[in-house]
Length: 89
Image (cartoon, rainbow, N blue to C red; front, side, top):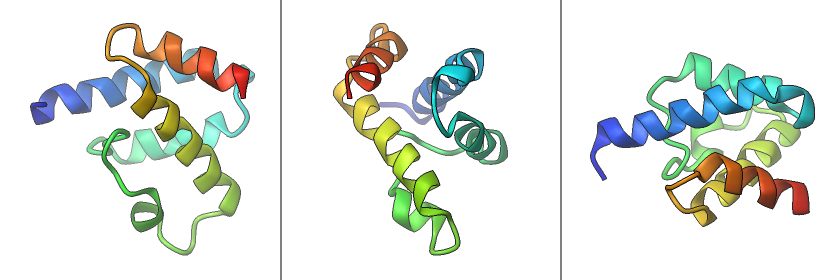
């Protein structure tokens, strides 16, 4: 997948997440990561290496959870599928 397309996918996820942040625990922290790191690739990034030791365990868990459902979701209507999967867990 081209780099620009991957960045766009993460940006779309971040935007949709910002619209619904009251429904997702830890959304504010996730949005801060997306805001401060525009090159962050939700599909490929190693969360432990990316966040390092100083990150809170809950922050890592929330981001890893979002990454798992991202990877399971088809590219078409990805956020809607992700939201459904997260709501089921």
